[in-house]
Length: 395
Ligand SMILES: *[C@@H]1O[C@H](CO)[C@@H](O)[C@H](O)[C@H]1NC(C)=O
Ligand SMILES: *[C@@H]1O[C@H](CO)[C@@H](O)[C@H](O)[C@H]1NC(C)=O
Ligand SMILES: [Mn+2]
Image (cartoon, rainbow, N blue to C red):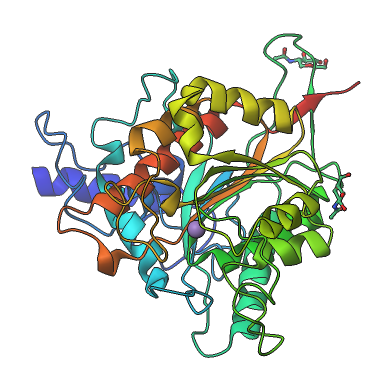
């Protein structure tokens, strides 16, 4: 009886397809990811968290870059397993796999976000995991191009869902992009922080120069002569200099970009002058002791205003007590709770895409502290995205 039900529903799903495909997961799984084929007697954990293939939050896997380029989506997770731009601990190439493992329990009870009053997985948006961009470990220049091409390929597509109307005025929303099309949002799983240079190149092709909210213990606007010494052109592009290059290339909106959780030592105060010139404001990690999370949220919102924003999160913004598995750990950071609170405070901002980087699972505890923190941080980002359509009311 059970077997029969299973088989017949599978056949029904397969028959509903208009086009041929060879996937093990039926395509309708993409449309109804939380409508299980097999229903146990009220058993919510069956095939939910510790079994099955691990995608981010058990979202449907779509081969967006190869055989399923015609499957539209609203938000895509994509891995960029690159770590040959790191100065201290390598290992972030395993970040995407680690973060996915850390995300397994996100949808165990359905995924409703209490403080934000939203369930991003039931918000009507089509959210998928596109797997990883193929990235060579042998040639940084080639790898950086691969990351840009992979990201751009996803970003250039048309979003699945219409933007809809403004919740306050009722007027139709218009896309924020330069070409007037509604594009999907991409959440990239790093990878070391170098990947943000190719990601911002891709973002620039759709939105132009962008405001950046950057959570990190480090500036990452260092001049190559200061960070790494730049013995070659390729060595000059690394996880401490990518924002310098992004600024030089005009990818960052000057004055409306901001770092949070900064606490690195410097070569001298000259590093801050250079950071000013790169277009960033700064929030020091220790400011949380005086102005609290509310004060930090206020500073960020005042800086970016209603401009389109790219959000980049270095897991080392969190204290190594909570997230030890990272490339260049710095003590004195924020707790996981504090960063999550600050991220929820971005509710209403137009976050066009985001990433989390520098998760190097080999240095994690057996309790998977860091990969869980990374996944939960992205749950807040996803919730904020689900609440805020990427559109504006025409002036
Ligand atoms: C959205 O706005 C458009 C144009 O202002 C209007 O024609 C349409 O009826 C609105 N849709 C809804 C659902 O309110
Ligand atoms: C950003 O603006 C500041 C202050 O006006 C200026 O000094 C700096 O050169 C600008 N940077 C870029 C990259 O345009
Ligand atoms: Mn960092």
